[in-house]
Image 1 (cartoon, rainbow, N blue to C red):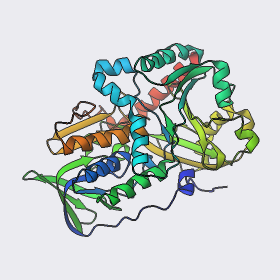
Image 2 (tube, rainbow, N blue to C red):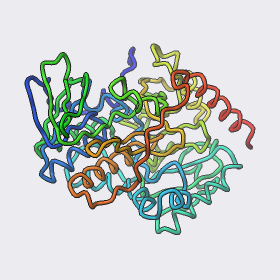
Image 3 (cartoon, rainbow, N blue to C red):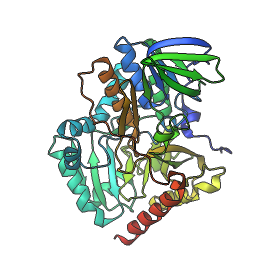
Image 4 (cartoon, rainbow, N blue to C red):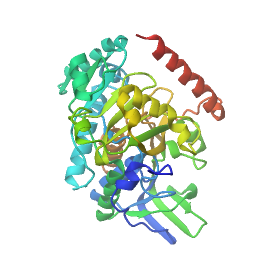
Length: 422
């Protein structure tokens, strides 16, 4: 039994790659701030393309959501394909539909050991009222050649072992991985390609002088000069870029993992090990994790948890899906912070010709951030290469300092709508 809030990923991951605290003055073509999936994917692609790259992270690569998420590799955006067509065009929809494939290909090409499995993904529902729009979503991807299908009640209950789910759809493009192993593997691959990775290396300030960026690191013992700056801080964006921080709503995702299940239990609970997400507005996601543990996650409080008492709601959801788990010990409880945007879309900003920012994955972070990081690198290496999403202005949210209050009201509203649907 774990007495702290350490994640199952931290306990089962391989060793962290070696990084160092920077000292002195450095120069590079591109400085990447943030050592998560976006930043490290971008750095890897840039280094392979011949650019000199430095990545800095305040704590260590994967400290944030990249090392703590549920490890579900899901293609697409929060919006359905037809709407993405209307918003951005068919090129963007095709990019979104291939983000899982892009991620799995990157893992294979760089021989990253992260338990990656293209096992598919189920978006299931406990609400029959949701089945109509789930079928619409499935059909829109199906018309674009995706390997997807609807699941009736009997099929989804057989694939999940839960009598709570009444239907859903299966996306065979998707899968799962060990997120902390993945970000550590990405980091090693970037280092092998020539990228320097500094951590702990908090950036205190950045300024543009004569077309170059100058970043002051830590207590001033180090500085980095670069031609281009990539900001990949997402939900951990802080005082360095206050306007960017105020355009995002950071929310906590809480997760728990049980003790290892028996062979008999594993034969009926997610027997194909296909991960699942619930279609409710405030839903859950679950899968089989390391050591045959059943894992479930969902929206938590805005305050960081300080004890296991904060996880009672998630544990209650686990018991609602699988009542027999009331007798199974919970071994791990942890949380991570992700970034939501007002329109539920990722945002790419280029406030200056030599600065690119990418944030706001809204729960689609593994595949989307990996693919977007790579796309940003391709664009920097060859400016004629189009980005998959258009640039947007940074739009701070009104009364952002009160985001916990109005976001909490919104969550209760969404929970009420979920409750009223049959």
